[in-house]
Image 1 (cartoon, helix red, strand yellow):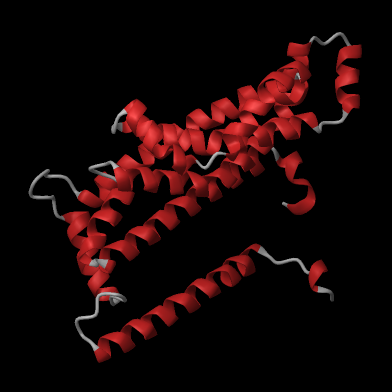
Image 2 (cartoon, one colour; image 1 turned 90 degrees about the horizontal axis):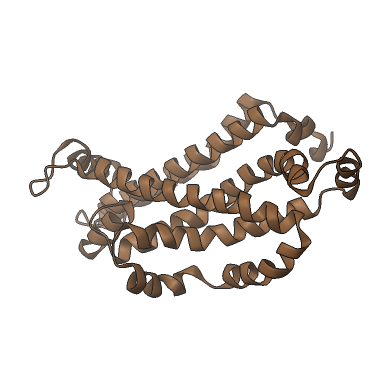
Length: 271
């Protein structure tokens, strides 16, 4: 049987997907044990026991200055910023994207502006955002929005603009106005694409969030990583990076399941 025709069951997919992660974990443990055998004080590749001890202090022991459980305070702060930024970007994507994709006059007016914003590196705008908006939460959320909203808008606009012209003509033949065409024809077909655009934007959103927290923040996953790096605290950095990866995977899987449950027709026979 050709590999391109071979279908993998759900259980087999889980096992095969876990295999590379298991291999990397074993490889890391072997390398860390080797380094510690040569130098017991090595900080570059901490052993699992050292990481567990350091994380236990952050997870279960309140901070002496703030009284907070730092790990959970960092997680909550980062998720709040990410959620607000992703939410605002999603609203902008569906509203502006539908208008750009379905209405040629709007596309002619706003299209170049959206394209121009989308191609500017968001990190380059970070100093401007901090100067204009201050060092508070607004600037951090704004960086996420500036970083992912234009790309999401362009993706939704391109998807709507590529809808078969026959659908629009049929709707207009039945008496639909431009507003009704957008709501009844374009919007339902744009929603599955919106969830996929959100999935693709999660990675960049995390990058912009960590960048903003590293520069100006007093709590957050990115702040904690850059705070302890000066002490070479890899026993904290590595678990934090792994935790960010887990959160991102959970978000991605959640959006994918939502898409399959809400819009099964958009996934065809694959699911």
